[in-house]
Image (tube, rainbow, N blue to C red):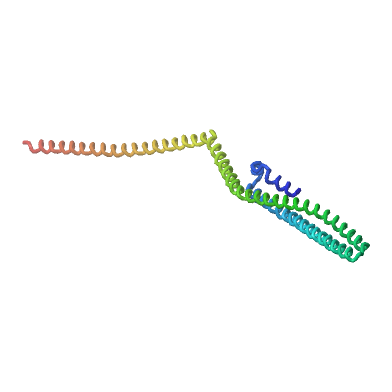
Length: 228
């Protein structure tokens, strides 16, 4: 009966605690089911032995009952032949076998009860193992989901850390500063180029004006020479 208690202890153990302490819940659950099946095989052997003992007792009971019947017949024959001495011996044998038969009857009845109880326990154990197998996949799925949630929560906690966001803020300020410097440099380059073109345009106007003035003076000089 001890083997059934060990198996019951395995099944009644707190599976959630086992999962919390296990590095790999699936491996642990597989091992638990494996242990239960191993114990089931051992229990089945014990039940088979109990049934065999029951059958052996029944055979011995039937054999002694048969001897009781045989020696009773012999006692009757002896009485019919006026052999009271043989009849008495036959009755003694009959009573001896009857006493053995009663003992085997008691033993067989008790063993039969034990066998029936063990067979019932074995069926119950088989049902428990089937239930454990059905629950195993569910528990493994729960464990994986819990682990995924734990990982996500850990990642979110790190992302929520103000230090991480402060780093992003500093990087953003730095990028904005670089963009501003670049924009200012490009603006200065553009202003310098515009000034150069404006200077060229201004220089061109003065040259034209100077040429016009020279032409005007030359015309006046020619005009004064032509006058008598």
